[in-house]
Structures are given as C-alpha cells and as structure tokens.
Length: 158
Image (cartoon, rainbow, N blue to C red; front, side, top):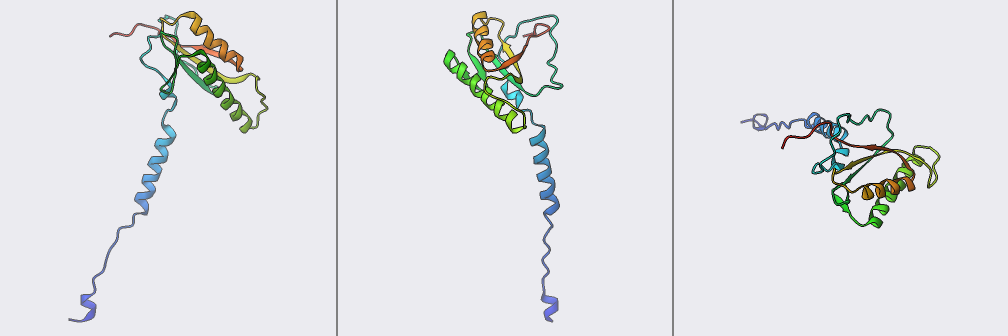
C-alpha cells in the first residue's frame, strides 16, 4: 500500500463555541442570583397587619435586612448576634461598608452622615419592644434614618 492510504486523519471537535456558551450561562446565573434572599430568616412569625404591602425597592440605593427573633437576637446571613455590643458592632460594620460604597461612587460621606440605605426590619411578632427599639436606636446612631418594618397581610396556613 502506498503511504498516502495509510495516513490517518484525526478530527478534533472545535470546543470554542461550547466553552463560550458555558461561560455565558455562568455569567448569566451570576448576574440574576438574588443574594438579598440569603439575608431573610424565614422561620420568623411576622406580625399580621391587614394593610401590609410588599417592599417597594424602586429608587432604593441599598437595603440592610435585619431579622430579629422572639428572643431579641439579631440574625443576618446565617449569623446570630445576641449580645447588645455584638449587635452594635455588626450595625457599625455595615454602616462603615455602606459609607465606603458611597465614597467609591464619588459621593461625599463622613462618618456619622445620613446613609441612603433603607433598613428593613423583620421582627418576630413575639419580639419585646425594648429589643426592637435597641436595634433601631443603634441603626440611627450609625446614620441609618430610613426604616421599613415588615409584616404579613394575612395569617399563613400551617
């Protein structure tokens, strides 16, 4: 046999379009994932209020979601803060991060200035008012002045 007949041709698939599609899918899912949902504690029994409405996030610069259970413990992103000093320190860290974000965006900000972030408080219906008030006071001391208290507009069926 001649040498040309013995020659085997190797065909390799072009993986570039497949890799491009996979990269685009990963990018898409990274962009649409809702990280704010991780901040919610769904075990809380929110108070029932007939006039409760969904949170309007149009035009909001940022949200800080604080979950307060029936014992007055603050829960955020899976961490529990029960000591008042820990709660104050957590809120101070969040305020510092929000302030740095404002500076990065080119806005003037100094420690203690009002922050445009809305604090969303999801307190259990059994939370003592003193604990709720302590969290609100700590937020106000750090410059948070916009608050939204969450409630349900009807009782969940169990």
